[in-house]
Length: 104
Image 1 (cartoon, helix red, strand yellow):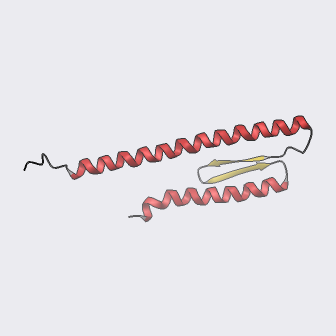
Image 2: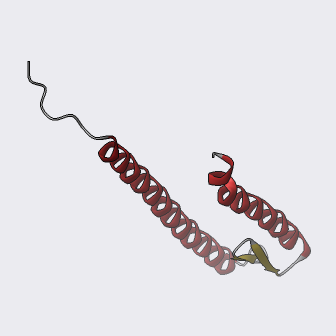
Image 3: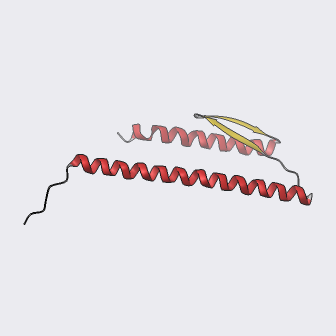
């Protein structure tokens, strides 16, 4: 019974690497699209609140430069939440950066 040529280990590793790369790319694209959708929805909600005249619009942002967060906000409450978000993002970034080193 002839089973054909055996598959080399290098070919299997290359195929698994391509599948992992495609998965990481797909997850990244989904997260980017989700971020845009959330931003657009927040913008629409802010416009709707200002048109009705109900509520005060407040906000802020976190800009990540590498693992370092730069935080700005319009009031104390939103700034505190963004500091917490910045710390969480910094820890996640550092864990994901160190993950390959820890798996060896």
